[in-house]
Image (cartoon, rainbow, N blue to C red; front, side, top):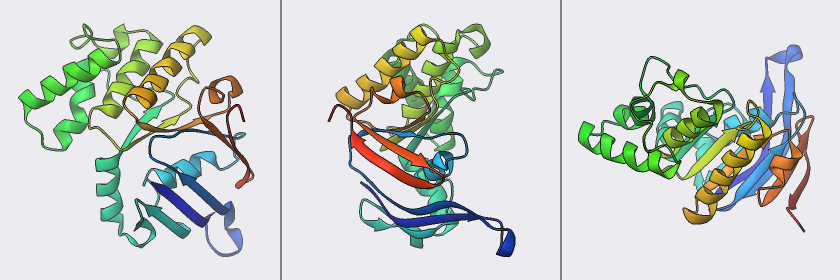
Length: 227
């Protein structure tokens, strides 16, 4: 599904440029649940920005379903991102002036879907994340765990090919973190959703199938969990 070959990333230009990623080689199969671990500044966020089609300025090759993404234009990257990736963030990034249902339905609205179809799909995904009765509520009236469930519902509402979760449990207590990880595992195992998760918490990472450790922009190890 995802095949990255000898990817390098620089910030800045000339003598002031900073080499962030060094010869990254990474393959992720459809249906995998992969954790990317690393310290702050290790390059993991830069890597997922490239994987998630947010950053098209890199050296090297990126094949997505064998298509040479590294040759795409910025407009093609944007289209690819909108049609293929769902994002879940640490701080939820919900719009507090909108209802939960409207937050979840936004990606479909941007895609030009009809309102009735949007309402039906929103009900479906809210039920899938255990929030059937929350559609009319405002995000500020929900707990942190419930808000993260809303952000997951928003991420999966378009049936993306893969999810990128950036520290999805970072702002949550341990019990709520366990609940969110259970939800991710259900999405992965039942729906076969490919999940790429960035975390600094080893306990969280160990609940995925595979852990990629990154340090100073280099992959240190890439191992199956429990092997």
